[in-house]
Amino acid sequence: MLENDLAVKNAKKALELDTLNLGVVLGLGEVLYRCNYFNEAIEVLEDMVKRFPNNKVANSILGACYYHGGQSGKARHFYENLSFDPKLILFYSLPQFYFLLETGRTEEAMKWREVIEAQPDGKWISPLCIAMVYFGLGQLDKAIEELHRGIRERDPILWIMHSEPTWRGFV
Image (cartoon, rainbow, N blue to C red; front, side, top):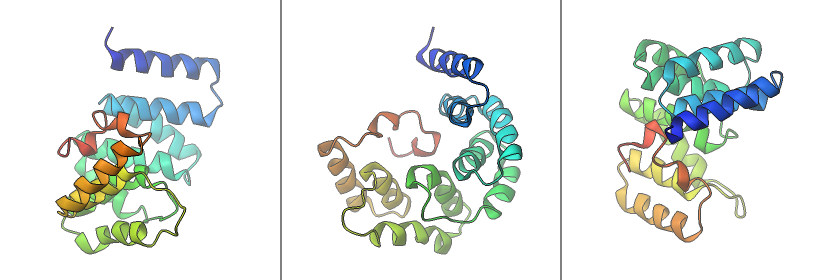
């Protein structure tokens, strides 16, 4: 059994054990997304977003599923109606950032850099996420610098680099 299939199997089993746990439902949607099972992820996440329309993480992952699953029309409509929220964990808003860049909306995408640069001292943001923003904006020296910092600091999301569809061009 492939690692992806095992991850999906375990996420589905967790959902069977606790069908009302929103974290488990979101976890299944995210695992399906990272394993490139976009249609299944869309099914899970659309249901969650219908029940909990203000869940920003579910909305962000759903938009990424549309985008990477070849439903660019839905992704466009979805991301145009999803407002930028600087409080959302940067990791979950990166697909929206890349969508804006790829559709020529650089001014809007620049908000991500502004959020990174305006963070108060002591507030940690994943160096890997910062690297991805700089990479998207074409600031490769800063991107590599942040990636090196992430390795030095043992950024806890480094493990996800190979499974995040948005980041495939960087890895």
